[in-house]
Image 1 (tube, helix red, strand yellow):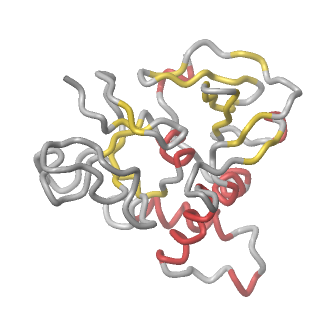
Image 2 (cartoon, helix red, strand yellow):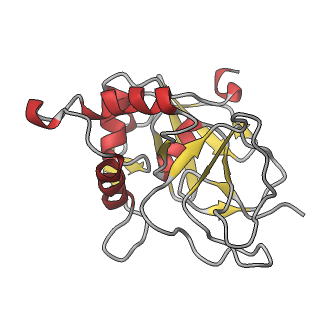
Image 3 (cartoon, rainbow, N blue to C red):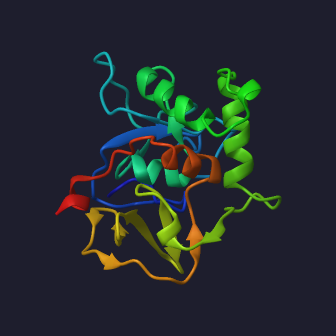
Length: 206
């Protein structure tokens, strides 16, 4: 039976047999029986590579962080995760470079990672600790951002919207003029607009 450790663009955790291309965590979310008991612990939500220095660990070890999996980086960013400083050090540096680019010059010095995590935490959750979004026309958003219409998430990809599924992206649909809810946190959207190259699942290019 699949574990409930696959992350959707909404940041929700679901069980699915479809495999992800990236791993990550947001603290220990499971109990000793491997059941998910909380949505997150703390503000450090990261996305990691599947293999790093030959390390191996049993999934959902009691008392240790919960291994989460993502379809791709676009999904992880939409959920509010950012590249890991350890296993994705160069990726994090690239992310930070673009994340800082639209800030005033005095604020462009690399901040502590806790500062970045604090900003992202405020952007992904509202005062009720529920998912925070804002509305925008998809045509005004860069490729790599995720939006939602109801319960369906879409990847903005050029002049199309690609429906998200746990196994990959479905057939593209034309961009629409109506505003949709933007899932990707605002500062990450700005980083992408400034040139951060988001990795997407191969199904997006079919």
